[in-house]
Length: 516
Ligand code: ADP
Ligand code: MN
Image (cartoon, rainbow, N blue to C red; front, side):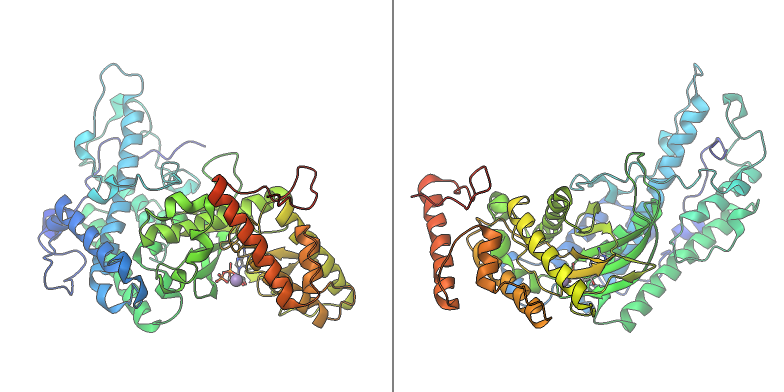
């Protein structure tokens, strides 16, 4: 498809002098920060705000023990401001991308080239995106692409260098302004003006833009008031922006709502959009797991990750925010391992900081029920049991993982089979507590299926041996547990002495070798 032909000259869509003088986002509630647009745009202030915001969110590593990091009240005002700034940043980025396209189009292979450099806007916030692991921003959805055929202006605006029109060309500029309305926040109703050959004057456009921002801000406020407790806590302005970008880039079509609010994460449902790259297909329905940026719950889980040698080197150097990202990263890696082994589980779509997008298990926005909530026929129950036994073995032997939170709460029933989810805390069997975690998993599984009437279900000790390949003979829980801990200690000693882990299994999949 042909790209929509938009004006050749750089559009004057930036803030005009009329509203440069007053704050476009209204008066902020803070007393310390003056907020003229010029100030907001100043790099230094941006940096200060960024610092301030981060300090408010993560005061000190040692402060982890006390209280939530984002309590709402104390960071509210600066968050509003930051949100607005980040929206501006987003706007600027798209504006620049468009400039680049226009510049390229105009220059074509002409000998004299015109630079739009001076018209670029890149916002100070933008300069620090180096920590983004996955760079999907560069392949973003092009809002000008002619997938809405009616927006295409008449012939004459496209192409050739001689057709350059000035920025004062009312018609061109007006159409462009109309097209740019698409850049407003997803909730902002722009009506169907985009589909018409509307020509907005810069003045009108700016007024609309300003309105869009204040609306966004207002609704965010209302929302915060309304919902003190649940989802909003995890979805701080930064997270909201991340989600917003995913929709804005076209990767996600819409985020429909929240499926689950847990202690450590909030899960949303979304309809998948178009992938920027050909080779990747976005599932029609996605689950977005947002790891909470409040750390109280996570500190309890230190032992899972701190002792996981895969993350050992990194753990000590990390700040709390990075540790949360690590949980998300861990879930991604673990899901990938499981996917490779053919275990039914969500498929990873993308990881962006503490936000993990994966395929949705369920249909039409309805998540598959947890095993604890579904009533299965005795036949299905038995089938589910053998499948779970199988998956535990696969997880252990092929993925080299112990789920570590396996129970009827983290198994979904979908398509006539069991799907495993929630693997951010999963560890390798050689983790200092790995075998204890495995034993606990076995206890949950065994109890659930025994209560569910599966006569064949092994007891927890038999299940442990069947999954791990060990042959612990203790016939009671206490002795069994003791042997498990002895094995773990042996492994730790080996690590101390030899600087590396024992191999948990020999190459042919026989029981693990714990030679001294
Ligand atoms: P938590 O650590 O909060 O328990 P989970 O990964 O278990 O996080 O997700 C919480 C809930 O969200 C799950 O119990 C499940 O109902 C739902 N959920 C999570 N991931 C998916 C998914 N990929 N598809 C459908 N539902 C999901
Ligand atoms: Mn869970």
